[in-house]
Structure formats: structure tokens, C-alpha cells
Amino acid sequence: MTKKTFDAYKTIGEVAEMLNLVNSKNGSLSTHTLRYWEKEFKQIKPKILAGNRRYYDVKTIEIIKNIKFLLKDKGMTIDGVKKQLDNDETNLDETANISINTKKNILKTKLNKISKLIKEIKK
Image: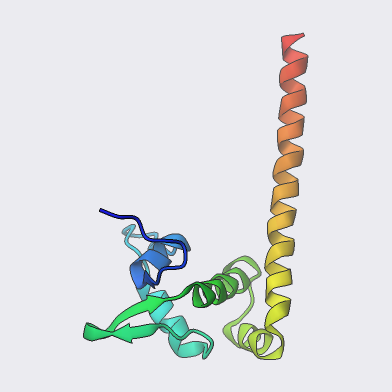
């Protein structure tokens, strides 16, 4: 079985897995969330092929990642995210990058503290 390239189209299940959209009750992938967002956000435009199968390109997946970030991590409403998307899509990239960088810095700080503790214990 060959592995898909990074820029290959992804199925709805692959995107749900990539974004960790999992039903907490039964552990199944929440593909219905993506279909709902597709109805709510005009920016999500998957290719729909035979049998109504959805395929998402890299650009669309990035938009979905930003939507998930704003809804789930930032706690914005759907209307708020729609306004954000309509106003300035470049703003979304900056917001997501700031959050990622902040998380990296927090992890780095914690790792440094742990490393210092280990060094002290060894002494």
C-alpha cells in the first residue's frame, strides 16, 4: 500500500482524524462536524466525486484547521468565525501561528525546568 503525498486530496475521514475530531462518547470520527461546517462556511469547498465522496485539498484543510482553532480553542461563535473569515483571512494565519508559538514557548519553558530539576537531583 502506498502512502499519500502531502499535497494529495484527503477524504473526510482523513481530515477528521488529522484534526482529532473524535466523538468522545464512542470514539468514532466526527465527520458530521466537517459536513456541518461545510454548510456554514462558504470557504470550505471540497471536491465531491461519485457517491458524494468528499475530497479536501491542502488549502481547504488549512481553512478548516483555522475554523477549528477559532471555534474550539478560542471559543468563538460560528457567526464570529464567519465575520473573521469574511474580513481578513490572513489574520487567521497570524492568530493560529501566535497560538502555536505560545504553546511551543510554554513547552520549552517546562522542559527547561524539568531539565534543571534532573541536573539538581543527579548532583
